[in-house]
Image (cartoon, rainbow, N blue to C red; front, top):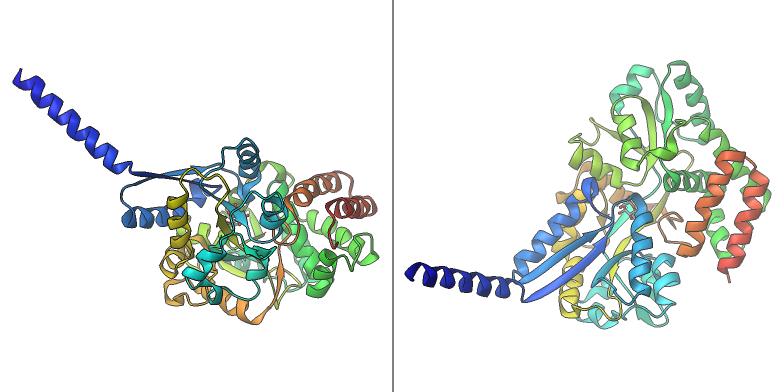
Length: 413
Ligand code: GAL
């Protein structure tokens, strides 16, 4: 009898404890899992320290650039089952997709009460604002146009990081004679990512901006030339690209099968946090060819969808995300710099310190692949143009199809 009583007491205590720990719930949704997980996990840990009674569900759908996650998110949003807070890129991915569909809550009052209107850079605020509202909280600034390499390997092969696409094509020839893949490439979205570096390098920062404001047509001979150069660059990449994740492409550089990789600076997070290589000596970087002085940027942000089941917890999550402590916990592990203007750079790697310097002094343009300049409907269909070009190498057709997509998406209107 005594034993039964004791067991009952234990069970009641356990039930009480579990109901205390489940006083609140928070479901956050992103594509930061596996190798991409550590920065988000550190932020969740910090959240749990501050709100120990909230049960955090860290819902992730794996897959670089969120290609898989965005599809799942769409189903959930349209099905009336939004996560409490989800990852979306600042810019058209957020505004042109979820804000125009009237699915997000305006966060202006949160920005006011947290004093954030002066804490985020002038270049960034317009990308999260529209219709008089502010629609998400940016957690970072990533750079898209970075070329990564292993200094010791370049030395062994007698090459240096090329500064222009012409130089790259010469270096490509040299590397081929040594049986080294000049440029490691991965699945479709990483090809699109490479395309934007070739485009900005060929058109210049202003030309790139003109493309998205509608002043420069995709069918203009200058833009057709981007495709020609892209084709030549593709000839310097591995043949099995479509089957590789961005991490697997980066691994080819690390293990010496390939010389370079063009990837956003989440690769710096991967190379230092996962691969334990030291920035500067273990791995090196340079702006992607012909883009020195230009910073192609993107920002990950989280918003509050209408109908979130745990609204109060989501708001406390957003508060942490936008705070100095939150950003300086997350970004040193992620490879990005803080979106806030007041972060403590001594907490960051030498790579991130150099990115922070460039962010202040370079011309800033938005990334296509990562949602800054075009809505999701354009970006995802542009992937099929890339696929078709990889197979056909027909620059004229690629240019004409892209212009059709731009017209359909109402770009520049
Ligand atoms: C980007 C995202 C980065 C990183 C990358 C690779 O779209 O902004 O934070 O996750 O995809 O998956």
